[in-house]
Length: 403
Image (tube, rainbow, N blue to C red):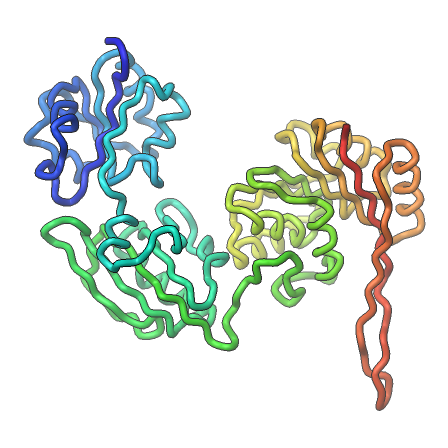
């Protein structure tokens, strides 16, 4: 057949009653209709061809769909196929001109309309296949949040998570089976959440309220050192803020954090944008475990950790957009391998506290260009009955952009 052969049909809890004529025709004419058991049941009256329920994981059904290329296939999706939906995965395998999408309102749109909330002013988060801790960066005082639940157990877990981070006074509205005959709205404070008999299809609308002690991640670089678990080897807040500024994170960019230790640089890189990626290379298992825990607590569990020592551990990694060398910088081969891996326009930032490593960075400046800066920080401390400043170790930083 010419034109699109795959039709993505968004369907809500109201079933076929709210489908447009094009969606109805696509389901009736398809030789294969793919969807969840619930979705297939909702559309049963229109389906004349074969059906396939999504396996786990859903990607296992993609070959069966691709085998039908050129013949009518329909895929059922909840609401909008491209809003946390199956359309995103299929579009990586099938060209846009082969796809026709007929979306229904997403659960987020239905919830915002029900509550008269402005979608552009909300954070929308899906916990379907994502850890609860991914909520952390979105927990900002006096903001609103829509959270799509994975199942009926999610609301209680979210309420406990909010309470544990100092957001127990937040107002939760539980919206169940939106758009269908079983639709229901119930409310509770997070700290008092006792709602039972929850529908598997549900979404949480949260009006965030923070206590004075709430764990709120600031939107600037340079998180408080106390937010990180550490064995003492930590890039301190002020140095970290300058280092992130030198790395210049951009949306979707990949960072290599060589000698990542507790992961503070990579974690803050990931916090800059939800599409950012980071690989931490760390030879010590205890520090990798610490970095993993820090990433989870601070809401970026997508941090990828590699066991090994640079430069050997760098082989085969995805091409970075930026590299930070915080450990292992005294080895010239590490800087050489990092520089070789960068594409044109990539940034290399290396920090040194020893004279030997500083000399290596000075030699790199002579060979490759860039700039050197020295960062000194002094903190007040008690000296008997008085206050005085105690200097920290001076950090020399080399910044270079590959031509």
